[in-house]
Structure formats: C-alpha cells, structure tokens
Length: 459
DNA sequence: GGACCTTTGAAGCCG
DNA sequence: CGGCTTCAAAGGTCC
Image (cartoon, rainbow, N blue to C red; front, side):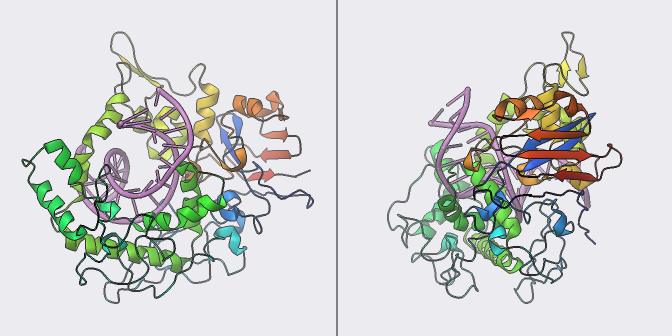
C-alpha cells in the first residue's frame, strides 16, 4: 500500500498580527547540502491566506507536501483513498470503476473540512460554477453541432468548461475544436469538425498527398486532454484574473497547487472528463496513436536535443545518468533543466571525466540550486526542504508580487535589499536572515539526523 | 519565429 | 516491467 512520506519537521510562526495584508516572499526552501545550509525563496507566501485573493498557491499549506499539519499527506476529508496517488502528486488519480463508470473511492484521507480555510486550497473553486449535471460529462473537445449526437453529449460541462467560461471567444458550435487542429491552423467557419478531423486523419495516413509538410501540420491530431489539462483550461482564466501574473509558467505552478488542493470529488470530475475525452477521441480517431504526434514534432524536439550537447558534453543528462533520479539534488542545474551538463567533461584527448561536486565558479549557484530541490525530501534522501515540492523544482522567473527568487547564497545576498546574511553562518547549521521587516531564523540539526526547524518570526 | 518555462497525466519508447 | 521521454494548454520571455 502506498504510504505518504513523512515530512521533515518544520514550523513557521508569525509573531505579529499587525502586518498589512500582502503576500511576502516568505516561502523559504531550506536544504542542507554538503556542509552548508541552503535557503531560497521560491514563491511568495501570503500570510493571510484566508482573505487573500491569491490564497491560491501562495500560502499553500495544502499544496505543499511538507506542511506539518498535513501529517505527510494532503488530506481533504476523512474519507480514505482507494487508490494510490500518482507518484509525483501525492493525490491519487481517481480510478473509474469500469462497471459503474463512477470514480472509485480513495484510500487516502483528506483533512476534515474546515481544517484549512477553503480559500487556502482553492478559493476560486467555490466560485467555479458546476452548472448543470456533471455526468455524463461531455467531451468538449468534440462537442458541437457538427458532431454526431451519438458521439457528443449535451452536458454543459465541456472540455471548455462550464458555460460562461467556455467555449472560448470566437469558438462557436460547429467549429472544429481547436484542440484538434494543428497549431498553425485556424478554424474555418462552421465546417463539420468531425468530417474535417476525419479528413485530417485520413490525410494523415496518406502522407503522399499534397505538400507533405503542410499536410502533416494540418493533419495533426492532438492528444486528448488529460484531467489536469482540462482543469487548467477551466481554472486558468480565473487564476489569471485573481493574480497579476500572466506568465503561464507561473500560472501553471499555481494551477498545479490548486490541482493538488482540489477536492477529491472535484478531481474525479476531471478524471471522468478526461476519460470521456479519451473515449470519444478513440471513437473519432480509431487509428490514432500518440505515437503519431511524436513524429510530427520530431523536428522541434530533435532541435532541443541536438542543441544541448556539444563536443565536450555529448550527453545532456550526464548527471542524470550518474546520480539517477533518486539524487536529483546532486545534478547540476543544466542537467536538471535537461540542458548541457557542466560537470561532465571530455578533455582534449577525448577522455571523459566527471567533476563530482562543485565546479569552480559554479559551486554556489549549482550546488545550492540543486540541493534546494524537491524530491529528496520525498525520497528519503538526506536533503530537506521546508517547502520542498515538485511544483517548485525550478524557480519561476516571475512570481506574484515580484518576490525575489533566491537561488544561491550569493544571489540571496544580492537580490534582497536590506537582507543581511552572515556569511560565516551560511556554513553552519544555524543562521539568521534579517530583512527589513522580516527575520528568519533557520536551525538545523546535523545532516544525518534531520529534524528541521524553521522559525520565521515576522517582526 | 521558435524554443523555453511550468504544471500533471497519459502514453510511447527503450533497455 | 520500470524508467524515461514526449505531448497536451497557455502565454510571457528569451534568443
């Protein structure tokens, strides 16, 4: 049976209640790498999650895998989960009972309702109107007047989300579903999407017809959206509206956390939607395989791959190969980003060698960046991170309210005005970081005994 | 203009 | 079979 990981001990305390309501870059990721302590902020934290419009992901005790109150696992009610969650998310996928067509109960428990403010998890969800019956859920991807009624149900909850949110502007019934169109193609009026898509498929199987590259582009049949993608489509607009962010990468981080915070039943809806999507997709395109799309984007992906290696680093994932996924904290930053490994080298004679550990000039940024990351805490590695989570495996460039993203000790010093870090303390296991209106005290026990305390008195 | 970033989930690929 | 990779959406950012 799947067992939730035990989070490291940590605590965040606020000693004041008079601070103006504003998200502050308080989310600290503390990790211990080699012989020194790592600290970094990844995301601004709202200390008033209950009233914050961004209550979203910015505070996120529910979203974080490392919040002590969660007893190691986000729980949203007392009902047990029946299925283990996807390894990466800690929330089980909702498995649909093939007999009943309904989601099976889960064996994992959510916290009792009210344990955390609703806004903490997903303030918007209460506002998201699931109008009309939820089941059967339409596969909005293929809904529309042009589709055979047998293939399209009339539920208002479509791939485009609830009425009012979807379909998106410019899309009307009868239009081909954008998700099924090639990236470059645009809807061409009320053409039968079904027949058009069928043509696309047929043409796709006949690569000799017409201009091959253009046909390939036109014939591209996209994958059916999974549950999370459907969720994103629906909630994205709301998150964007609530948050000043516009960068999708950051938005998606929030969405990822909201997905985690989503009620089990709510997630079930999306899993069901995704299942319907897939079923309908299979009906519409019996011969289609995800493999087809692999080929259509080969050029793009190859370019990615080819661009990575160079003479002195033919393998872009040397750290991956050397350390494996279990020790991603050991990877250099480029490897973590699937880019050129900077530790793996080939000398002039062609001899391969690997710089294990810090590279001159890179030690701070690399080691710190790497070690502050996620999976270790989940996998039992010595590394610990207070906010360690997959959602922040790499810092986003733009976070809400312009919070600094502290990536390295050096950057930590440089990026935050008023921040004072005793350099010598960074080599110790205790440190105090002082900001203009914030004092962060971080304590840690030695590496091999890892209860971790993070006290953040806000002054 | 295209790749990247970022998220989760599904599916293909590969050893 | 497990681990890894790719792709799906989105739009700002970067080169």
